[in-house]
View (tube, rainbow, N blue to C red):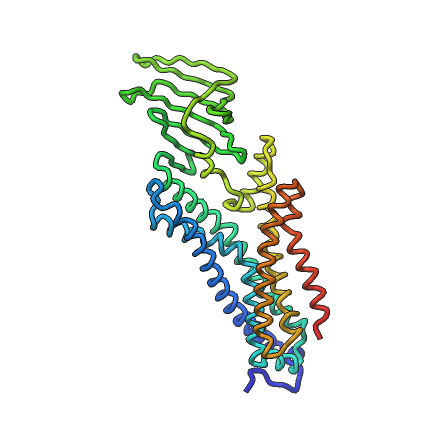
Length: 372
């Protein structure tokens, strides 16, 4: 027998039954979404691991380091594919209900498309909240650990600590950089010079540093010299030249990545870059993309409904699933590609973050109106 009886309107006469129906739909859809999310995350994680294999043998980078990097990158991967997984999982779940004729029974029992949509979108609120938690708290933490651990394994002489910045060794010189800016310039640079007996002989502090050909140009320089008796001499200069084997490429692995920051951190960092006359578009794109993801999740759920109810037959499951996969891939690719396009052509970052979702939302609305 079917799980739902017929002959009266359950939505109007039995409110408790409607709640049970909502819980049942949520359980079925959530189960399929989690399965799809796990499969897609596994595929992307495997691809990431294959990419890391090429670095094996560089520095101290080993298979365990590569596996650790992939494991810590999984929350970011999950976050990026979340809307695509929600769409495919929702289509799969609704198609399974159609395969068992449960959707037909629901409709014949008086449950309207609007009520089913409402139940699905309630699940969307929960999914959006989960995505927000992953993006705001889990991803920034794990991605920072992943990048930092990978960089340390690839280059032994570099160490990065959140409280003290970036530390490097260049022969008898130790360098501390508080911050590497998006243009690979440096802020708050300290250079410690030691002699052959490991005695500190000079300390150079600079407010900013810019790489030029084979050396660094330092601004706002303060140099402290220490003689053998321990007496110090302090000299200041507006500019100085620092010749070292350390290059911007060496430091690029510690560059602050937009995806590693939460919304609050992104807002603060954008303000910081503006005050320092730096390009903020990468960070603005990340900011609007994070704000847009909950809306994209809801749009993907809404889009799944007309595809299933537009052809509510048992033999249409394969077609629906194929269409869902194709739409999910197109949405994922369009979101990535448009992000690069707006950066290259200097278009408003909000456009790259929201246009794919708005386009799919319009398409979902038009298809929804055609449901019989």
